[in-house]
Length: 418
Image (cartoon, rainbow, N blue to C red):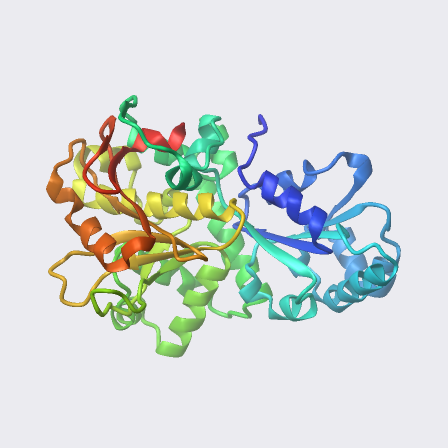
């Protein structure tokens, strides 16, 4: 398969140069190993994976000797590090000794299919010594070849009126997915996702979550499918999936930890209009194609015949694109949904904020045309946030990039690709 440059590459390169260790996490099969293996020339890195039984068993049998025999003049890349937790404290010791010897940068790049919250022992051992980054499946701009970061563009571009080619929304969503199925047009996606989910349920949930009934994870995922983009009603999900509260919380955390799902928290802070906000998060799936697989629906068919469901898939796709773009930028970004209490439906799908409070808001509309009424929610969001509100965007399926009032723009889907 051809290599597609990832928008996270530059940030990962800088992180490896400036931190003693880095942890690159992400969903299975999203390209972590490929990215890590191409980060440096072969003579500058020592790559190994604990998916290889012989290497994993050697590290488990004598972790002390395994660590001591690693080369000190190269970046040691350890893939699927969560499979040998006995190494965590030894990695800490290695890093601390390297600092004392004046070699405190670029010692380890660790990768894993679980986020840091699922690996508290690693996080505790490497606190202050390791930076954490997340790689997602392909973004729309990566697979198109532009490698543009649309969040960076929305923040910094001087937008001007412009026409774009009308986008094939179903095609864009199909391509913005896991590398193997994005680049292999002939692959049976259903079979691929069967194997993908099977690996998570058969191995991951038992390795780092100690879950004894992984089949209930599938039941939970199916229940969450119908709630994409909606406020989480935990009682309803528990009833649908047949889970008690303790099991539900544990299994939902596992779905997040394995990068199958994520939540967008509500925007809620003191504001000039003194508004209060709902407290419930919204649920999304990390890959919209995986969501369709769980629903047993084809994206092209949904796009042609089911506008209601397609609206939810479009919103899920935009949520994932925001996560992909924000994770590749310097600094910290916060994603939330804007949903005032008793606002008569005047909620905004996404608010993205920098650490300094500066905000861009995005409303998603499955429509090829726009009118002023499409911006009412964004105007309330702007007036509530105040001077920190930089720009409001209605992302739609039309072809024109056009202004709609103070700090308001209609932005076509094609903007994501260029």
